[in-house]
Length: 384
Image (cartoon, rainbow, N blue to C red):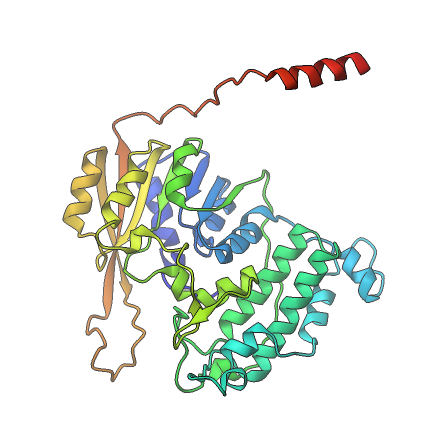
């Protein structure tokens, strides 16, 4: 998936840092998972992964990359569609072919994000061609109906929705952020949308995946060996940058507004993307003591200056920093006067070895049964 801030190019550097500083352990927590690239990488190296992100879009990716180890059978929906029997094999590819042949219709995506659907409105939006938008609507509706009718199980639902989100990302007439549409059609946007099955990675044990605010999760998270943080760097909210895919994932027909047709609600905004709140929000995680080792990826062009970040981290343990040069992403055209002249940016990787040991897992207080509960318990005991 096209996703700004992905750490795919940094994976060997992160892994090398673990080896360089003898960072050991069995559990690895990626608290701002995004496309689950980091968690998926360390899953392949035998770590047990804990993964979290506020966006449901990310949750779908985490489920597929971390929790689904083998392709599900799709047997129920295959029988419903009359697909030919394939003993001891999966029907997944046949189901994908069926969805790719779906006849499009004018649904939510077409109505709000294609030129045909917005032609009579104040803004003609060009996120998708009319045909691709109608095809996305048809495929998303089928996936939802199959789930409602129990023709697909949860894992099959995640696999199909992942395939649709990935395909919708690649044929969108946008930059990598998908914050808004381009004025002219990009070549990739003119290609017909085509779903492809994801590659799944086997694992010896289950992993934990969360769709919630990471600042809340650390309050109750069982301590992990390695806590990896890749928080938002800038004032751009990821919920706004990927509003269209988030809507496609949630399938909740939200109210949309403005030229870009963004979701009207802001419950998915992060304080880490607000200059006045970013440092305190990050410190809330650092002081949670839910880890033995902490790694933090943070760009040199970020809301929190390096000096302030070092000062905060140094209060909680010994800090070491390594840097990696990356080509700078710029959404502007090369001849646009607003284009940043810098071609590269430094990615800092901070390693914090805390002074204090991880906190003990919170124990739930014993609550004695009420009088009515005791009566029910005694009645069941008498019955048996």
